Length: 299
Image (cartoon, rainbow, N blue to C red; front, side, top):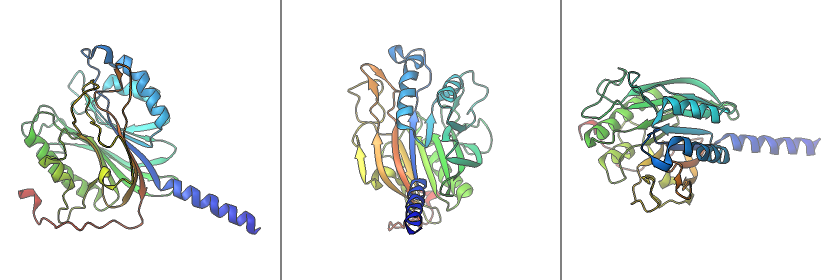
């Protein structure tokens, strides 16, 4: 009986440990442009399917997904559910920022999205001098194995306007506080801004009364392709441009961080390389020692 109890305890411990771990990716799939030559969507889709089947992420925040691409992705990802609406339903080639998550591993408790503008609750609103409507899709999930409840936010910031990106970062911080408060939260996205930008610093500064987000790259214990670009522009010799990030608040530790250099000869998985991390839930929130800024919205 003791041996049986011992083995049951080992199995239970292993299951709980596995339940605490979540593999998250951010992936700008590149919209299905007819001008992409050998890298058109129909050619890239089998490579994407092979990659996602191999990596088997728990959660994937995607960007630049058009209506037809969303149908294709649903077809090749039958083990996932997704959340997300179009950013502009009037557009013929509307784009989504969907969040895909494993159906068997997570239960969906809530979902919605907001627009990155002065009026985030108004659909299709365009913020500041942005080129298009921009959105944040979010889900509240419960791990069916461990019982952990957490939020995932996924976005794609404006590619033209620096002001729109900076203001979007402020809106994101405010809305995450409003929606998730101090709950465990993950933020994925193509931010069209690098680490030297004010946009990035707005997202990762330790604001007073707002729970801090940290770049998973800075927390990871192990790395693969850490110094690679994330935007490749369909070029093997692309300059270093890292604009795709996975940020977390203090309820996670980061085991692995990887930029996935996925291509077959001249065929690229996308004009962005996917980024993934393996996260563990923490029992207590990690503290930040940074100095606080009392009123960040006037910076």
